[in-house]
Length: 469
Image (cartoon, rainbow, N blue to C red; front, top):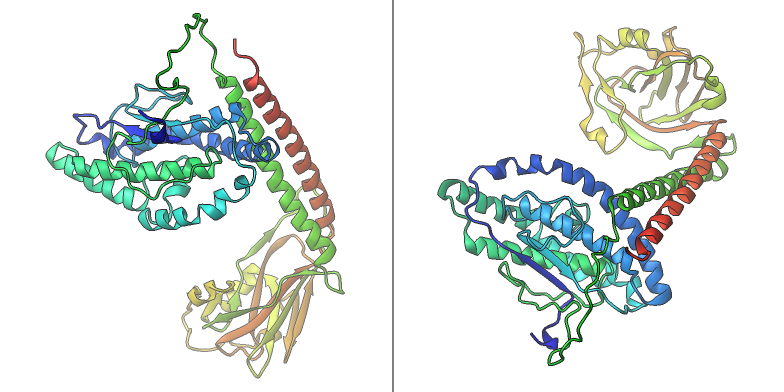
């Protein structure tokens, strides 16, 4: 072993023999507990990687405590992947562990970097890794690395196809083809090297090289003595507790979930704040842009809207305010837009063909309902019916304003003369007086969740980075 052969990432695997011909059919079920745990671990992985990015920018060092955790998540994911669709290379159930587990048939080691580039940390995970993303997207069907980052394994695209071929051969012959195994491990190894690079765990650019076989040709020196030097005697020490105990990992996961939940809630609150303060028109409505809706029948019909007033809840007008529909039809007769009780609307439309009111691009796949006399128009033009609680009809742009009330309601858009097809440009809006209270609550809850989550993450990291006893 020479220093010239040093590499930051080493991926090894051993093909167990004999392998069960049938067990691979149910392994994806057997690892469901792992996938549940890994889902939460990858949430924590994403959060602490951002913390590591900031630390590298400030100090040029990847915090050892975070490195141990992220390496542990990658190791755990690799073992689960190897057991399942990443290789199906062993029947030995993977351990629930962030540790190295050197006795397991699949191992991953990443050398801890003493120093990292502050500049590269800003570009290597997205810009510099683009060539690898393109190659892996071609080799893995566009999903291999993303599946890896979500904890589900390396079994997408080409890897999944090769592994499927291998286990079908295993099913009929009882043997796993060695050549396929070597190729699969080469692809897995490539993906894991890229994963370590974009996770900021090394500055060494992943090679564009397919190192085949279960044994990684790269020599990894992690804490080895320099060649030709005799290490000094070391006094025996008492066993040390691992940095990441179950309690610390659970705390980190809970804190990370709170952080991401807080960020999502803050994002939603901010979007509503912008809509409330900047998205209103001169009449005070928060509106959508006009979109074209098309139906082959005699009417465009929205799904029934069921409104109920819960005891003690705020009044609907105080929350929703007024609802406005603006419509312009292409038919010479103009457009009709109305809202009525769902039962009455259903009775009126039952004999005629009508289409579901669906926004583009779904408009090309409209559901059409045909009645007994589907080839004929409605018996009377829509504006002459008396069941509408509010309506607007005429040539050119029409506007209908409705104050929602408890009940079952249906919105209908038709040509004013009841002809077909119906083609109309529609815009929807609401005064939404309760919007300010909603975004205020979201910002408050999101901010509190973010602060509490950040504190829990910080305490977990501090506890794990303390002196091990």
